[in-house]
Image (cartoon, rainbow, N blue to C red; front, side, top):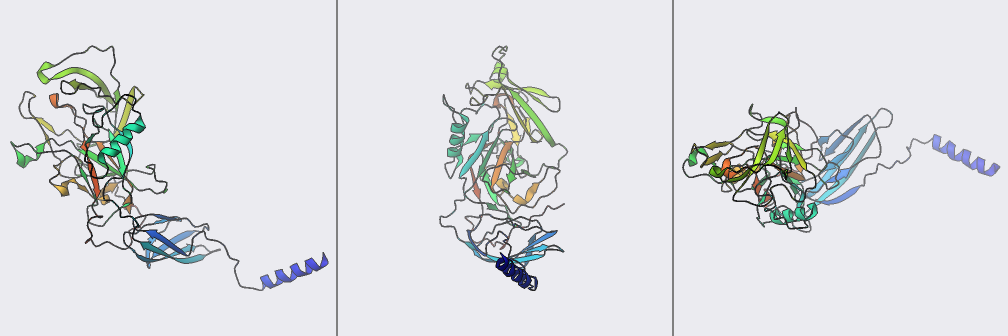
Length: 407
């Protein structure tokens, strides 16, 4: 025992005379290899008063945890400085960004959610078959709009939505449109200069997978289109649809080709009530048949109605396009008007938000409007694409990672 204590005393004496600091694991490797457009979460084990992350000598974040993502291949020199009066720490390492082994597709690869509101194309686009569950309908929606399948799906009345993503993060390129979405809008021929016809504008939301778990459970941001700041746009709108009452009185309006004008009732959070009627052109159920609840509620921003009955008798409605920033709002022949910039993202207070990219995109019908025999205004879409995958000539900044919110 005496010999052991002597050895221990000598070891402690030598350690106390040394200037060396015991090695502490930071939890970050010296070298990483990752494909482009894929996230690398970096979560240091040590803490301090402040943090400074730099990539190739450019400061990119002041948060403790940092997600690295790069759009181009190359060697990236990364440094984390932990600023602390008692335990300062600096660590440098290298991230090698490689080209993906399997080429990314520019098109949709995954549909995460399909939650349409009631409408005349619901249970048809995609088609419901007896025994279908939410999971099987979701699979049908994914098969419809993935890749270049180009099979239209309907989102139904106001609020109905679909959430989808790609096999990579869609990078936010400065001063460029980042992705495009195809609908089925067309201009009518009588007054084409007014850009009216069948515009059924859908609002776009985006989300960045901050927790890197691969599911859309992070914060959502609206892409502020041309009408976002309009006094006619209502934010924080909410609507609830009710399953048709089997004991209701069925009243037809033959003049407007309606079989059941009180078919599906709705009420909203501003005291309004109304109905989605059933017309003679679509006889299937309009309420999603795989939904078990007797009520479904949707929330978001509400755009002003965009339709006009230019006939005066309900026989000819024109739905006018908004200038920019919405799905199914201009014909597909106008790619720029159907393309979207991640930099349009705003938070719930309307303040611009910087996102390095997006992993999830949500589209929902943005108008609560009924147009006689035309039925409810419902956004449709059939495809989406990352505009940067096919554009090989684009000049891309090396680092797109600044985790800041612009006020």
